[in-house]
Image 1 (cartoon, one colour):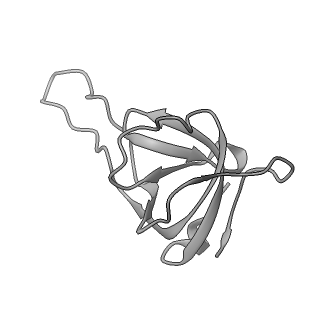
Image 2: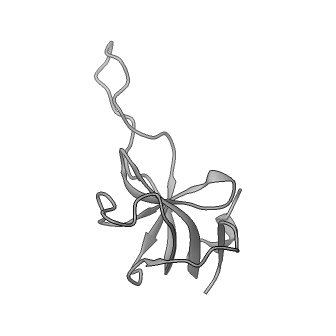
Image 3: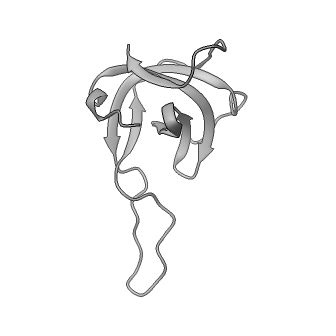
Length: 103
């Protein structure tokens, strides 16, 4: 799922809350991870379907860096989707599937 056309806009992300090496994520449509800025992990909402509204950005959050001749460090190649200035995440009612849409 590409949501590049929504970068820079205020969006509502709906999906399953999960924890990744780079921080807390919402797995939106087709499993696209959207990281929540400054949030290391989920507490009680982990594994739940949630909604959160904020400004969508795309940036490197865990660059791959390694010393010459050493295995690659744990990181993520390229730029990831990040939600900034977001409202408190809330549980979402069942019925609608994962999505990213303009707020």
